[in-house]
Image (cartoon, rainbow, N blue to C red; front, side, top):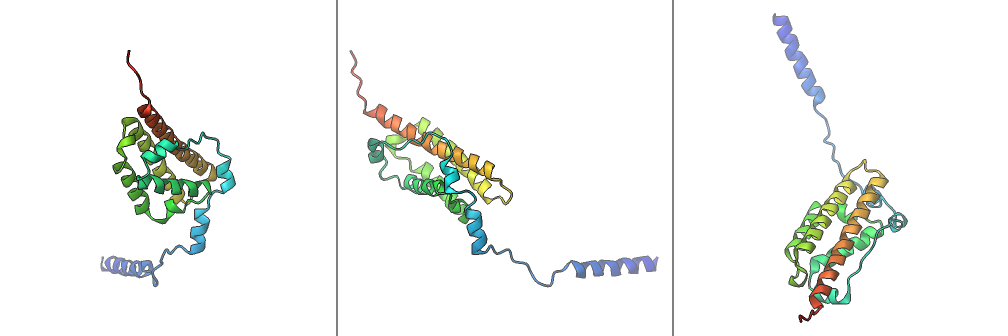
Length: 175
């Protein structure tokens, strides 16, 4: 029985030494890998996506001119249209911070349940795009579909804000 116990101890010590690594492996992502990961899709592929793109009316632009998170989001949208997904890959906190600020600072002129609902959909599609952009095994078709959903959600927010401002400006005379 002593032989079995000594053999077990020796085998355990041997396994512990073999499982220890001499050098710690660091998982540093090189700049070249980041660039490759950032440009998963091309500008031409994004331009081929078919969706209705609504832009803001001048009255709506005046109503939201101080809404900084919206204009940050507009910059992200323009980068995505160029095929650059670097914003979603760079820092997790940036996306979350933008989403929080977007939701908290909605101007009173466009603050309504319908716009809040569209912003919620936009946030959901943005988080979906972020998760797909950060996966290593995402195929191009899934990513393009997520980009299309994201751009469509942003377009719907613009459309709803335009409708809200248009409705508020309209004067209806009662008989």
